[in-house]
Image 1 (spheres, rainbow, N blue to C red):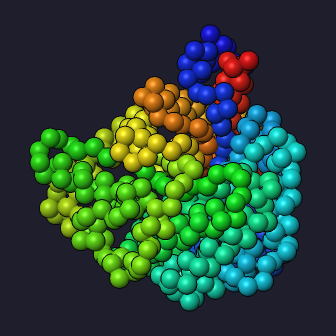
Image 2: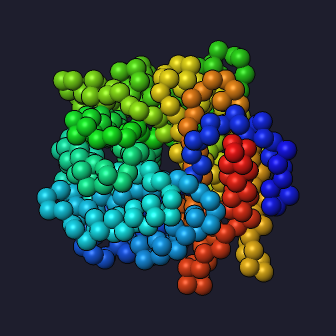
Length: 460
Ligand code: IFM
């Protein structure tokens, strides 16, 4: 038994379930932390436009300054070094590289990621890079955004350029983060940029996102870059409220919307039946060998997991495919998301059993809580408990034979939580927005440090 600095005990045999090269990391995304939206030639993104539109975000918050990571990246890398985090997942802001989506490369934007990468590598931290975490150049949006098939080719070209530019220092690439959110939150519910509410367009967008993913994977292979490429999906465990056939059917409908809409095309080569009726048709968007491109073999799948759902049939829920969410709410995070670590094990097992045997990585998991800074300390025991139980769930997945290679806590820092602005704090590190962006590791950050140390010792 190992005792970590904070008194917590870690069992060596249990820790050894995780392979010695298991990646323990943290994650962020460009628009949520960088700020500096008008610096060094960065173009405008759909999130600049959306967050500056009245009533779209909490208190009108924007990512203009965010965590000012653009200027403080050295301090942030040093924080990770202090925490002993060996892996860091971040995203490149497409409009920093190509301010209008394509054309001339913005050298100053590239230079920022050069500096960040060099600083990370010098600190012994290995980068994992997401190419699209929702900040489409606004110039492309004005030409139809993801509804326009041209955007697919702009993305492929941007991706190819990034492989060329940074392939010497990045060996793990993620094409898209949570394309479900771009399609559904951005184009069906209108809660995310670009704020469209059109079911038919949501289907087209989903297809174009997937196609842009597939073509980028092909570009990666043709560049013969070493390293690995995958995509990150947000997946949820969905359970029926009872064994009644109508509840089981409701479960299937919700599962189709939340999970199968992206898993099936990537791993099974088709969209699940029933999706068109529920969400609108991507039908005419599918051309030629699109599905084969979308199914381009991947090196790994990234899974973002936060919560689970229990659902029942309810004919009155016409807008929600006749599905009512009846998930117990005895334990919820500050997002109102029910806490269900067993769902993480179930999601990982299900992918392994039904979809693919490629390695899996949990590329995001974490929780928002209403953290309080008291006497220069944030005692976020609820977050520690959340992390412990979800890491425990990883152990259960490994016991079932799932090939799991990494876990990235969302997030390194408190940051701009999209339409919730700065009202939600997901960070291991507290950001004091009112005190010049001061960073202060929360108790959970030190817990994670101790956990990682214990893991390393278990293998030495
Ligand atoms: O903050 C987001 C992140 O950008 C994508 N995954 C979910 C997180 C929490 O909502």
